[in-house]
Image (tube, rainbow, N blue to C red; front, side, top):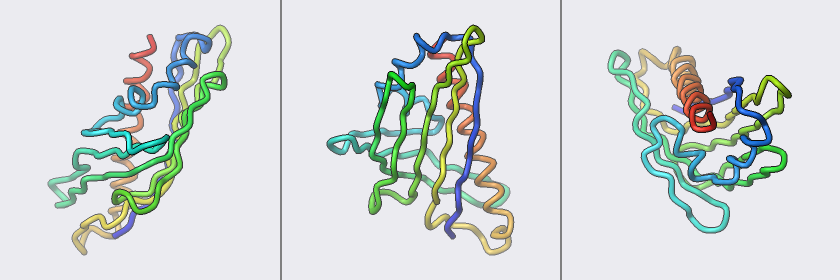
Length: 155
């Protein structure tokens, strides 16, 4: 079963934008903060392959090890790290954008948007009607964990 991902989350931190924005330049360091990332390897040029630990539910008998490749670009001046899915590598096609937004005296907003599709997720027939909602919620929680880890790293 293929499952669409469409998540947009944010977290405000007290760190000044001028200090936080440079952090987006280190693609590997940023992406390794994402929960469940088991391996994040350069594939040449600006392409990286990410392998995750399983996203799972014992109750629903769903377990899926996500892997995806992306062509990454970083703009430290603007505080943006984004990636485009690379077809043919991994079992997910995910596009993403981490944007740091200057909040002035209040600090910086971290905003992560991820869209795409997890492919060939093994879902028992009984749970297919709710699988999309379940996986979307799990992915949202992972994004929240990423934003918190990034906020902690920038504090």
